[in-house]
Length: 77
Image (cartoon, rainbow, N blue to C red; front, side):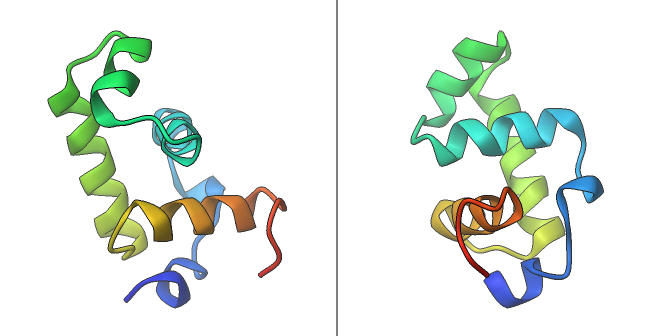
């Protein structure tokens, strides 16, 4: 599991909301802060992140951020 599995997917496989949340995660915001910015509960953000982890098979926020940065072309694959 991890980046190797996640590399099979692209941003097109996610919803706009999931991408928005991943972008904020990649900027270092925590679940509470993201929830406040998006006017939803911290639990809702946690659920989104859990769902994304399960879909991409990433294990943590670091792997998720690395995958996102590679997908955006900000980091070489």
